[in-house]
Amino acid sequence: MNPGPSKVELNDQTDVGSYFVATYPPFSVWSAEAVDRDARPALASTADGSVPLGVYLHIPFCRKRCHFCYFRVYTDKNAQEVQQYLDVLAREWELYAQQKAVAGRRVDFVYFGGGTPSFLSTQQLQSLAARLSAVASWRDAEEVTFECEPGTLTETKLAAIRNLGVTRLSLGIENFDDRILELNGRAHRSPEIGQAFRYARSLAFPQINIDLIAGMLGETEENWRDCIRKTLALEPDSVTIYQMELPYNTTISKDLLRGTKVFAEPVVNWATKRRWVGEAFEALERAGYHVRSAYTAVRDPSRTKFLYTDRLWQGADMVGLGVASFGHVNGVHMQNADTWESYSAAVGRGDLPLNRAYRPTHDERMIRELVLQLKLGSVRPSYFRNKYGVDLLDRFRDELASLSREGSLQEASNERIALTREGLLRVDVLLPRFFHPEHVGIRYT
Ligand code: SF4
Image 1: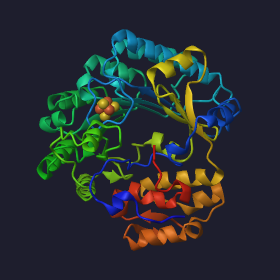
Image 2: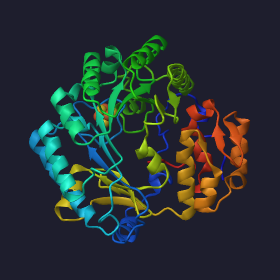
Image 3: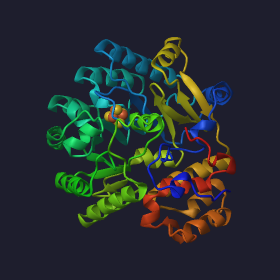
């Protein structure tokens, strides 16, 4: 294993490049050849029915493209094109439901992500939900998450979203200050935040989550404290805070790489972003919240769960529907075609629109679970012993020692391996040391 420092550790500036670890091995080693060799046979074979199954739906529309966005989104599609996309999405789910690895399995969790799922009209949402659930119902799903942009929500639309069986409404607030929202290209403004939140509360969603980003362009100490105060005043059930990063395909990254200097305001360094998230967590803890991962605090852990991440981080299956979506079924990682045209054309031919795939080895699956579960702040060695027959303390002796030297490790015992708060706040930087040597220092996506 290579315990060498990553780029972020060597240089604390927010440079262009990927920081967030979403899976393992890195996407860059997934290949087109593995689609026919591994993904299609995996889908055509019976899967282990005891493994939970989720469905992710990518709704790739937004009112505006945020300057820090790195997702496949469209801001120029008309109502007819949106409807065509939804038809393709429904057809794709029909194709998946015919695969042996998926057919007849209960859907345990559903995630409407994007893009902006709340960009869809009430009527589009209702007809999409009716078509999807006619193929396989998600009424028994334990969790249905729906991402929203505050400026797209009306009371009627929110009521329709609640009627879809949504259990967690995730409000992409990101920041409460209009100047910062404007500087970063966000579509919504502060008056829409309070209004959307009040509507959502009145409809009694079981969980309302607020998303914030630490370190948006133009962020200041004073404004960040104000964002924390305003978040606490709303009393959300959970708060998710990401640290601003600059993957290659964001508008800000392109500006930095070309030296065009359109964006005069810098993104603060990683130490400042970590401190801001740390201060937010402390304020939330003083208000009675519990930090449950590197990104999330919840008010009542006994009733507020994040099954989507928990299940995925424990190796659940997930069908990824939509352009450029990611999935994992029956032991194989897979990603859909990443352009509108190629995605729609494949589904139109009656093909699963897969673009690249990767079958992780037993050891790579173990590493994937380890690095993802470390984002919760601690892992149980007994879980890995029982599931993978590996002794983490022995296998990763050098890596754990390096974490300890850096002040990132709180405990490494047979009971648990736990990170310090400082380690948790920089967890994504710490994880590559657990990767196989050939996966360290390579392009992530
Ligand atoms: S709302 Fe989200 S998906 Fe849409 S452009 Fe902004 S960051 Fe990207």
